[in-house]
Length: 329
Image (cartoon, rainbow, N blue to C red; front, top):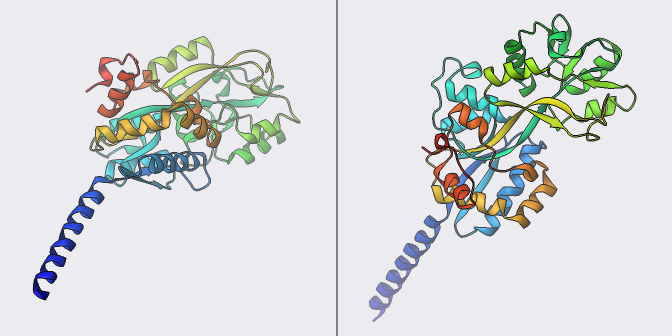
């Protein structure tokens, strides 16, 4: 009898282990690359990870991984360290084609887009008293483009090359650039922001600044030569400087939430579903404003040739979004 009880207990423990193992196997784990600690991407991803883990606790478990930003995210997506991440459009193009920062490396054709995560404005700032009024006027001038390796530096080089601008580049951080502009050590500064960075908003409190707007010819050149870049209007009274009460044009480039093609379609679908649900989206927006403008803006991806993840394509088609054939592969 004692032996029989021991056998039955053993069978019970085995069955419990099998059931527990099956339940554990149902929880899929993913690593989501974000950005530097304390940065907007890190905060925005962290909030979304908490939301998904709470609402799909029996189905998914996401880890928000800190990173250096878009460049590191693209590299770690390629290596398989990250399952999903946010990446800037210019870095996506270079990773996809094996050019620029990815020169000499195998082109990464494993990028799949999920959703547009907002634009960054390519703001070139000068003082209102400066003769600089278009991008061509920057040739021969000392222009700050941000610290080495920053997104501002890579964008500036691409834009200046396309437009034939031969400027003397400086690589100060934004605080140093604002001070350098005020003191006359710089002629202009490129400051990617939403639309301006805090340093230049602060500068505008004491010194009248000017947003250098691209000419119509410059807009046409960029449209042909840089597929991920667009022109958008900064609405009146939303940013400081000369003509702040009028619409002003600026180049912009986007950032996208990407996933590896190996990430299950249902997981991608569910991630979009929960983060785009109106109440959840509103809550996420309170943490990071980019969630407010996230959505199906895929025109640059058509130019780049980067498709949507199947799970994302399904989600957007169910929402009634008309997707270009190039996005569905």
